[in-house]
Length: 198
Ligand code: SAH
Image (cartoon, rainbow, N blue to C red):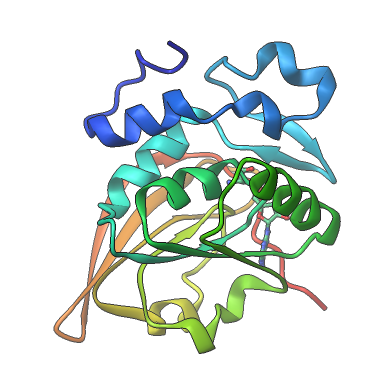
């Protein structure tokens, strides 16, 4: 089974990675590589994340079936599908409109009906739908966008890469507990930059 040998600890996350057809989320010329554990180009200078990193970030979110999740950086929609399988509802924001449209088409065709899409700068989050039990940012910012921290529910988890673009970044999990934020470093990663909209 594809991705069955990834070094992940949560069997539910692994099962979801094995179930979702990743080839549907990548451009035709890269389909032969869809089940390799590597990132692939999806156009507009962006990439579909490496399956292991998708799994790791999902594990760190520790999702419950009742959770409401915010995702920044829809990209191909692959990570969105993983979140939609494990949580109650996913709100996903992407700045590049054609990517958001394509992801929405693919996810609708695959039958997901628990996802809301928005084309916007994810820096501001999705205030009307907040607070969120979990927030995932799939692009590297140099610091944590404050509005996103503020949109975490008590007990909520925010997982994101922090660091300069083009360099290796640090993966962080920030948990809100009794109004305070607990920050944990979770290893090194490499993501496309978090870009602000003019
Ligand atoms: N999880 C996605 C990752 C896509 S790459 C996948 O596996 O396909 C990260 C995405 O974040 C890119 O599509 C990029 O356009 C988007 N992005 C970057 N900065 C953003 C911002 N400020 N708001 C929303 N999306 C952003």
